[in-house]
Image 1 (spheres, rainbow, N blue to C red):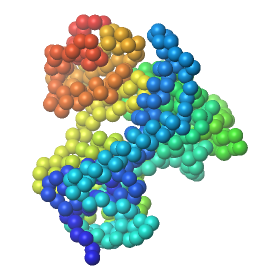
Image 2: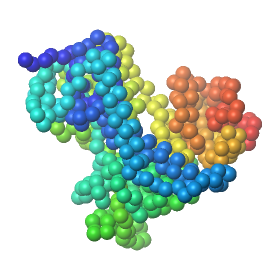
Image 3: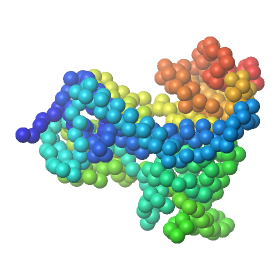
Image 4: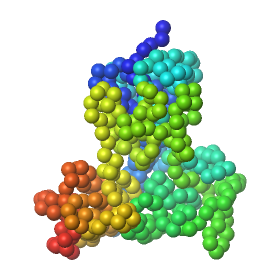
Length: 464
């Protein structure tokens, strides 16, 4: 007997599982089809969560090696990489099981297998053991994305790594080359550099972290260089060859060609939407030039009752953006007013120090010919940051010249990823820099740097 659902969600990542739960809460009979064998998608299984686990543990290891600098005497600090990886895997397993529990709690039907379209109202699900056909009134595609490689170069996840392979290295490499200076590569580079690997980043552009405020990007690279991460900018990777010892990366720049030997190479040049196995051509779903699914403001494709959210559609490939879309489309389908404010989606790079940003950067405002004021405050002048020996970085606030409305906030410094939430709320409610400046912040806290940066917009900061 074929089972019938009001809505079927294909993909159980942050977009899909959140959407499925909200649909069920709204009274719709909901199924979620997931091929991985565990819920949570790339983020929970091989992305956000395991990488943050390793970032935290590697930072703890690095700090422990330098405890004597702050008067804590210890014995020899040793790395047990196998145990560290086991700890990371345990965290992932706990969280994926937690999502399964949420499905049961909210009465979402979880179907394991690869989902594809037999028709716009019929989904075929295949796994290793069986095939299942389900009927559905509406379908939401949320299959996420996968790592993008360089032309002609395939991942083997041993010597030529994607972000997935970089999370599962079993033996500490002596040298790692990272192709691409974006946030994923820099986070992974930070992990392995702290653990003792020589890390070299090759970036095609003249700066790292494309899209980030240039002033923050430049400061970020200075700090990473002090952490012994090396950079080759304006450099193109021409060829990667595997050898008995590791890999050879052939590069070219304006003035020279070079060969770099390393144990492993991590290719981190972006991600592409994962839509290959959906059989979209069967129902005629339109894609753009980047193979992303085209949707309207209500997440509807050109095919009636077929929707798409998350990494498979346009916009930043971020888990929290995907979750917001999952909630929004569920509420729209249920007749409510779902909405995502794409102008106020924060981004975070979880290195040490962290980088966080929201809204417009300085380059974008200049390009759009918007007049603005700048307020900055360094963590060097923040009492909490100084007290714990984390004085690097600053807070930067961009406010519209006449209305004083906050247009963008950029933070590089301790706990920036947590601090940006204050500005997310402030900007959602249309706050001015004056509103932030006149809000009492506890002392001593890192967030005082936000208040001081807001004061600095009108050149009246107190502590610098």
